[in-house]
Structure formats: C-alpha cells, structure tokens
Length: 356
Image (cartoon, rainbow, N blue to C red; front, side, top):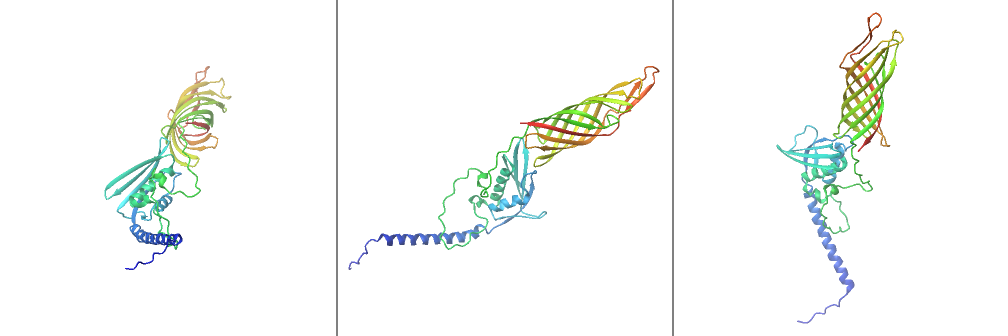
C-alpha cells in the first residue's frame, strides 16, 4: 500500500485538540450530574418535630430552616399530624455547659444522640446536622438545597471532600458572620448587700439592712444564706428593733438576655425587741423569738460591670404569732404593746458581685 503522508507535528493543533477533548468530558460530566441530581432529591420525608429549648436559643422555625439548608428532603409536619418518624430536640444547661439531645422515634423504637457545647447555637448546629443526616445521609456531602441551574459554561472539576473534623464544622455559616466566643463559666458564688422592708413584724413598715451569700453551683437551683439588722423604729406605743437570719432556696424560671426571673422561698428567724413608746410610762420592754416563712418572686439584672441588681417581692407568713406584753413594775398590770400580724409583705433590693 502506498504510504500516506503524515502531517508534521503542530503544537497549536494538538493544544486545540486537547481543549476539545476536555470540553467533551465536561459536557459528559454535566449530563451525568443533571441526571443524578433529581434522583438524589426525589424522595422527601415528612417528620414530626418536638422542639424544647431555653430562652436565648434559636426558635423552632430557625432550627427547621437550618436543617433544610443542609437537605431539601426534610419537611416538618403541622401539629397533630401523624408521621412515620418523630424527632425530639431538647437543649438545657448543665454545670455551666449546654447539653442537647436528639431523639428519633421510629414505630416504637427510640434512638437518642447527645451533644454538648459552649453555647446553644453550637449545640443546635450539631443537632441540625444530625437531623439532616437521619433523613438524608447524603447531607454530609454538602449537596445544595436547590438543584443547580443550567449553565452554558463547562463545570469545574469536582475535588474530593476532606474528612470532617467535627459535626459543627460541617454546618454552613453565613459569610462575614462573627465567630462565637466560648460561653463564660456560670458563677458559683455571689455576695450581695441591700435593704429590706417588711410588715407583720411590727405595726408599721420595718426597714432592715441586709447581706446575703448565694450558692449557684446547682443552677438553676440556688441557695442563699442571709442576715439583717433592723434599727429601732417606733410609733407612739412601741419601739421595735430586731436581728434576723434566713436560709433560702430559689429556682431560676427564665433567662431573658441579662434578666433572670426566680421563684424563691426562705425560712427566717431571730429575735425581736419591743419597748414601750413615748405614751407608755414607765418604759416597758419585751424580747421575743421570731420565725416566718417568706415566699416571693425575684428578678436579677446582670450589668456590664460584673455587678448585678436583684429585687424581691412577696409574702411573709409568721410561724410564731407573738403578743408583745409587758408588766408595769408598780401595779403588776400586763400591757399589750403589739400582736404579730398573721400575714405580711416583704420587699428587698440588693446589689451584688458574682464569683466563678
């Protein structure tokens, strides 16, 4: 056979041929991805979601949006709807840390996962990822929540994903978002000083100077130990002064940014000295023990300067209903100076410093 002429090597023509080959490969890869994407997002699951978190965390709609940003296979049913699987998300504080639990109930079988973190947003990020993976295992691959739009330009080559360091690192973050700082450790102790104004102890509002030591180790449960001194106050018939101490317990109901609300109770006791007033001649005196149960609501405001302000308002219920009687030294007659009321009020205002 006659030899055919072989064209000489041309670098420009070879480079053009390689570009054509790469373009054909890109077009084939784009077609494969277009065929695969509908299949990957074809199946959706509707789940029931029970969501319980404390104040300061994301609300339920924000959590659902975070899950759906990871996968578009998840739909949340309305309240009362019957679904195959039920998801339960709970976040609570424990020993200064945030603890989250995800429970998945599938036809009577329950599976629970627990995570902890420095703040609520970090914990919810991990729980949102766990929820997305439970519905769509491909969520780890970072598939977009919307199918990719058709483009005339060849797609870029896909590079393998690096191994995930932690679940929270896989959660997409908005560009420019600030990195969360580690949560400050919950204070363990507090010292406060202030004043109290109460009824039932005397026939007039009785003012006291007070100091209180608080123990917050078992938050939201708190213990308190306090003492108060009421200087002499009087009306025309009686002059009253007292030394009191109390042991109290309170439960933190809710946190609203820097404000916390508590339900509190305390048992107080001490000694009350009653002396006849200007109209009682000669002057008579009586000293009696005092014991009462205090029930109140408290509000604590944390300031930017480490200090806190706390106000209490409640009822004082005397456990010893005393009659302050005195005997006239000349004729031996008994004179009633005052009888303790059965129900009184108690108001207090403190300023204090917490310690970690």
